[in-house]
Amino acid sequence: MGPLSGIKVLDLSRVLAGPLCTMILADLGAEVIKVEPPWGDETRGWGPPFAAGESAYFLSVNRGKKSVVLDLKRKEGQEAVRRLAQGADVLVENYKTGDLARYGLDYESLKALNPRLVYLSLTGFGHTGPRAKEPGYDAALQGYTGIMSVTGEPQGPPMKVGVAWIDVMTGMMGAVAVLTALWERERSGVGQHVDLSLFDVGLFALVNLGESYLLTGRPPQRLGNAHAQIVPYGAFPAADGWLVLAVGNDEQFGRLCQVLGLPHLAARFPTNPSRVEGREEVERTLAQVLRTRPRAHWLERLKGAGIPAAPVNDLAEAFQDPQAQARGAVWTLEHPLLGTLPTLANPLRFLSRTPARPPTPPPLLGEHTEAVLLEAGYTPEEVRRLVEMGAARVAKRREG
Image (tube, rainbow, N blue to C red):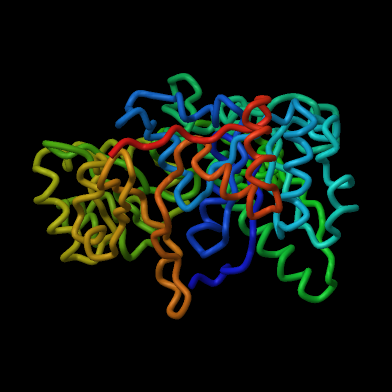
């Protein structure tokens, strides 16, 4: 039994930020009912890769959920969501600002039915401000919030982060918001509305670079793999691959120069501020030496000298790393179509008493429509009529 056992989450979100948020809650034991439109969450069609018709994208953020298909454009579908919301603790949605109000499914409408409801709205820009009604996509938000301006090589074009970085962080922040509101409800007895935007999260996540701008008024520039305030700190080429140096203090830099046979470099740039000032010469000199030997040679010597260094792994190397193996970085689920399904393990699996645990596999579209509606008080005949009129849909029967 997980720590969130007994918490019921109604998930009206699609794509990434919302589904990641609710998957975290499912991993911790919450019952998550994923309400999908008749065509399903958009990510069901985002690929390749696909396996047995299921997309890797959808599978990555939807384990542990029950899929219910309802057409919210029909009054019968809207009424079904209201009935489900009456018995829910949490509702998560990522519709554009104002969209759900047209259906009577906004916070104020559902609050009247269930005052204890914690209602999380995930949008591109929030429910206030001049951009409130604009749609929000991760790539666009990486542009708006400035992270692209500091990502990439100095002379190259702006680059987005390789994954949907702001979406992922918004999903994680959304889980924090839900847990915070649930804990506060224990004292007050009532729920609340959480207005969380990708824009706000993206600006918050700029951390030291954002604070540097606020203090100086000067926007930071792109530094490639380098660090704005620490040198050397980034990726360097060895003879057969790339490695990362993360030299955090002057003493470590002195030992690095001993390993590389560069005592004159340590003498010339003894402090981090001097190395930041002389960044180009320091990094060029280090790179010239590191290119002369294979990566494994340097990593062994650097580790022996207590200098923080690591390989730049591809994903195959990352998942095959002994640390990933020892920590159980992959959960294996039994999927009805795919058989054995490897999934990314939740990092909250190391709580000492109530860890996150592998839940059920990602659902088929409409797999749980009938069971969930029956539990909400519909009769079998009422469910059949909803399906016949197109307000609901059930999954096709599995073969075998």
